Amino acid sequence: MPRALEVFISTRPWSFPMTIVCVGFGIAYGFWLTGSIDVPLSLLALLGSVLLHAAANVWNDYFDYRYGIDRPGVGTTVYRPHPIFANIMVPGHVLVFGTSLGLAALGIGWALVLAGRPLALLLGLAGFILAYSYTGPPLNLKYRGLGELGVFIAWGPLMVVGGAYVASGSLSLEAAAASVPLGLLVAAVLLANNIRDVENDRESGAYTLAVRIGRRSAIKLYQSMILAPYIILVVLYTAKLVPLASLVALASLPLAVSLARLMSREVPVDADPRTAKLVVAFGVPYILGTLASAIANAI
Image (cartoon, rainbow, N blue to C red):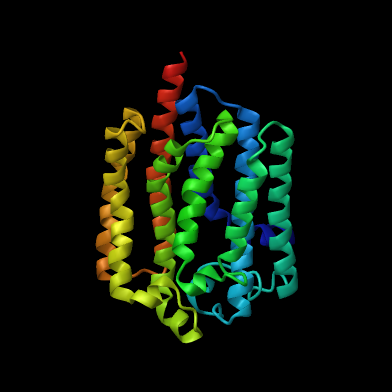
C-alpha cells in the first residue's frame, strides 16, 4: 500500500461522514432558518471540521498508545491499522501529524474570519481544544469519564451552530436545540467503543464513563442515547424548531431499535462503526428534509 494512503487511512476517514452530517445539517438549518446561504464558505467550514476530526483521531491514537490503553490485539487495533502498531509512523510523528491537522483547521478558521465570519476562529479554537483534550493532557476527558460529554458538545451544538453561522452569518440558539439528536448519536458511537473496551480500559487505568458506571448501566445509557433522538425530533417539530420534512429522519428508527436489541445480547467488536452508520442513517434524511424545506421557502 502506498505510504501516503497508509497515512490517510490512519486518520480513520470512514468516521468523517459523522462530521459531514453534523456540519451539513448546520448548513442546511442555517439556510432554513434565515433563508441565506454562502456555499463557498460552507464548504470551507466543512473542510475545517473534517480536519479537526482527523486531528482528534490521530491524537487519540497517540495518547492511547502513550498511556498504555492501545495495545496490539486489543480494541480497535483488531479491525483497523493503528498508525503506531502498524508501523505507519513512529509515535513522535503521530503527535506532529495530528497537531498539523489541527493547525490547518485553525488556518481555515482564520480564512473564514477574513471572509466575514469573525466568530469562526473562536468556534474553531473551541473545536481544537475539545479535539485535543479528548485524550490529551491536562484534561484527558476520556480517562475522566467525560469523553462522551465532550463529543456531544463538539459534534452537537458546536458543529451545528458553527455550520449554521458560517452558512448564514447568524448565530442561533435554535440551531443548538436542533443539534441535540445528532450530538447524542455521535456520543453514542464513543460510548459503544468504550463499552466494548471496558475490561481493557479498567485494567489500563482509563476510567471512561463505561468503566465508572459499569457495563450494564453503560449499555442502558447507550440504548437511551440512540432512541431518545427520535423523541427529541418530534418535540423539536412540535416546538416549530425544525420543519415538517425533517421528520423523515424517523425512518431510521428500526435500525436504532435493532442496535439497542443487539447490545442487550452482546457487544460486537464493531459496535462503534455500527453506531456510526446510525448517525448517517438518521442524519442524511435530517439534512435533506431541512434543506428541501429551506429551498421551498426560498422559491
